[in-house]
Image (cartoon, rainbow over all chains, first blue to last red; front, top):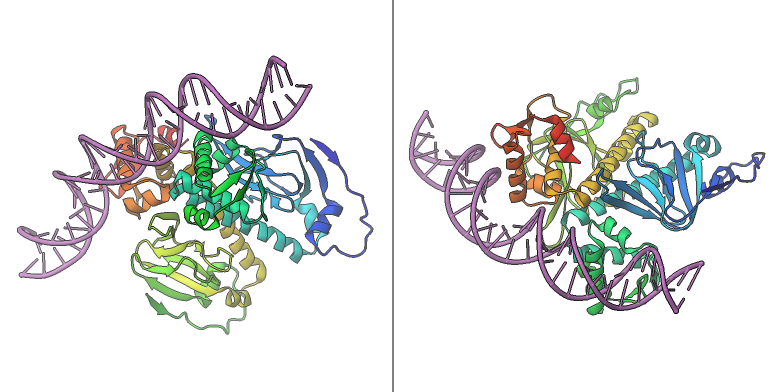
Length: 216
Length: 216
DNA sequence: CGGTCCATTGATGTCATTCAAGAAAAGTGG
DNA sequence: CCACTTTTCTTGAATGACATCAATGGACCG
C-alpha cells in the first residue's frame, strides 16, 4: 500500500458542492495491490472510503476459513460505512486499485452537511438494497439461478461485452457455491447459448429473455 | 385491519423529545390480524412503521412461490424504511399486532430533525447489519449452524425461557431450509442437550458454550 | 518453453430436500 | 370439558443437488 497526499488548497473560499470535489481536495489517496487488505473484519470503523479505480470486494471469514463475499465496489462508490463500532466485513483489493480515504469527522468539517449526509445515506441505502437482494439469492435460488442472476446484474450495467473483474473463487464465495459448481453452470449457460464467453473473463449475453427467466 | 386515531393534542407547545412520544402523538395506530399483509412487495414506500405489540415479518416471494423471510421485528422497532421507491420485501403480521404508521413527510413536520434522522438512521443501520449477518448465514453455514445461530440470537436477548413467536415454516424460510430440516436440527440439538424444549414453541439453552460453537 | 496458477470436466460422496406417513398441538362445536 | 377436525410438527426412507476429490486442460508469465 502507498500514500499520496492531496494538494492542500484549504484556502479555497467556496465550499465544494459535490462529494467528489470534497474528496479530491481533502481525502488521502491510497493505492492497494491486488489482494491487499484495505481494512480488516473487526477493525474500528471511522473512515470512509471511495473507489477511484479498480474494484474492491468485501468479505467475511468463518473461523474455519469459509469465506462469504459481501459485494463488489467499483469506481465512484463509497464503502466501509458499516456504522457499527467495527467493520463486520473486511475490504480487499480485488484488482490493483486506488482509493480515497477520509475520516468521517474531517469530512464533516469540509462539506456542507446536506451534501455529505445525502451521499452517505445513498451509499448505506444502496448497500442495504444489495444485501437484501443477496439474501434472497442465497436463501432461495438454485445454483443455476444464482449464476444467471450474477451475470444478469453485471450485464445490465454494461453495454455489450462484459469484463469479469473477479475470478471463479470470488464468484463462488459471493454466490455461496464452489468454483466447480460455478464453472459447470457457466458451461451450461454457454452450451444453451444464453451467454457466450471469449476466454474465461469476458462474455456477452445472447438471449436476454432466457437469462432473465433463469435469474428468477 | 382496523384503524384508530391518536388524540389530536397538536396544541402542545413543546416539541417531543423522543421518537416514541412523537409517534404516540402523531401516528395512526393500526391493528393487523395474524398473517395479514401490512404492505406488499413492490408497493410504494413513503410510510414509516413501528411495532407497538406483536411481531412483524418481512418476506419476499419468487414467482413460483418460494419465499425468503428477511427478518422479524418486535415491539419498539421501526420497519418499512427501505428507501427505494418501492418495498422490496413485503411486511406481514406474524402474530396479531398493533403498528404505528406515519407519513415520512408528516413526521418531518412534527419532530425536531435531529431526533427523527437519528432514529431512522439507527433503524436503517440495524437493518443493514442484520442483512449482512443474514448473508453470511445463508451463504456459508450448514443447516445445523443456521439453526444454532437462530436460537442463539433469540436466546441472547431473552433471560431464561425463550418463546418462539414463529412457526417452523417461518424459521425455515428465514434460514433458507425446509421445515423438515429445521425440525431435524432442533431434535438433534435437543438430543445432545444443547437446548431443551417445552412444547414446540418454547425452549431454554442448556449449554451456551456448545451453542455458540455450533453457531460458528 | 517450462512452470505456476486458474478453470474445466468427470467420478463419487454427502447433506439437505422431497415424498410419505404418523404424532402432537391447536382450533371448533356440542 | 370432551370428542372431532384441522393444522403443524416430527420422523423415516428415497432422491437429488451441490460438494468433494482427482485429473486434465488452458492461460499467463518469466
